[in-house]
Structure formats: C-alpha cells, structure tokens
Figure 1 (cartoon, one colour):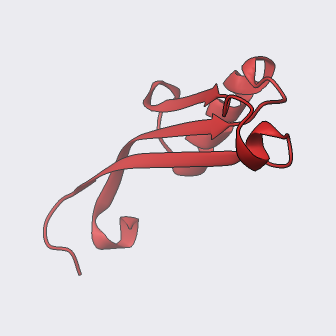
Figure 2 (cartoon, helix red, strand yellow):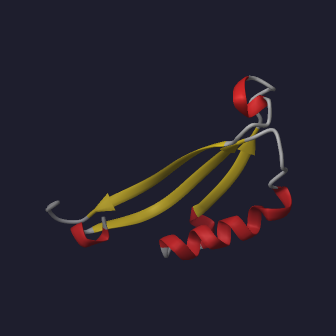
Length: 78
C-alpha cells in the first residue's frame, strides 16, 4: 500500500468476545497497533463488545475481530 503511494490515516479495531475484558490491555494494544502501522496513537482505536452469548463467540469458543483503516492515496495507483 505504501509502495503505491498510500498513507494510513487511521485504524479502528473492534473485538467481539465474551471474555477476557480488554480494558486493562487496551492502551498497550493501541500502542502496538500505532507502532506497527507507523501512525500516531490518537489515530488508533481499539474497542470491544460481546456477542450476547450467541454462537461460538457467545459460548466462549473463540473471538472475532473487525478492522478498518482509512487510506489516502496521492498520485496514481500502480
């Protein structure tokens, strides 16, 4: 993406899990995400929700994540 002129503007991660609670780890997760993406901490969001005890997530058999990033391209895309 960067090789083609793209710049990551922000990243948002939503975790879907019944457990564990991410609150105690949220800042560290945001810091690691910011470092990996080479963007500032205020442009990284990590939040969580439950699946209301529905499906494999609700039975605590796994977790899911949804990640979205806004990317701006300057010039032509190769």
